[in-house]
Structure formats: C-alpha cells, structure tokens
Image 1 (cartoon, protein in one colour):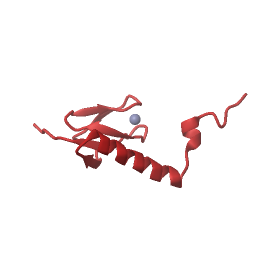
Image 2 (tube, protein in one colour):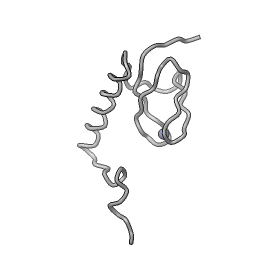
Image 3 (cartoon, helix red, strand yellow):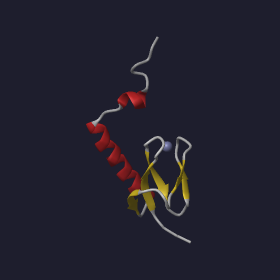
Image 4 (cartoon, protein in one colour):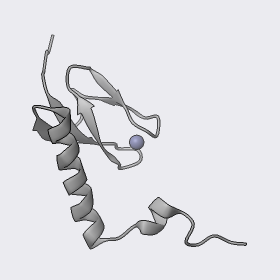
Length: 82
Ligand SMILES: [Zn+2]
C-alpha cells in the first residue's frame, strides 16, 4: 500500500490539461471526466500544500500561454459563426 502525501501537478492524457491532484487519493478525475491513476501517471511536480501546487500550475500555464497562445480554445468565441 502506497501512502503518499502532498499535492502534485499532473497532466491529463485525454485533454492535455494540467491539474492539481491530492496524492492521498489513488485516482484523480479530470474536468473532462478522464480518471487518472496517480500511481501510473507522471508527476510533473510535487508540493506540500494545495496552494503551492496551484501556484505552480498557474505558473506553468502562464509560461505555456506566453509561447503558443491558445486563447481561441479558452474563449471559444473568436471564430463564432453567425
Ligand atoms: Zn482531462
């Protein structure tokens, strides 16, 4: 039995989102509905608190967005057909 503590930033294989997971649980369900096995997935970062992991996640996303902007994905209304 693995009993890990802390919070980790993981990547969802399905939607490629990065999310924060509580390592005291065995699985984490992504926003897209994909169930991620925390013992199988790659932990991008491990933090002691959820706040820390959240901050790290935000920094990762900011870094990513400054390179290849995917604002149309987030907003979804830029190419709205009327
Ligand atoms: Zn997902």
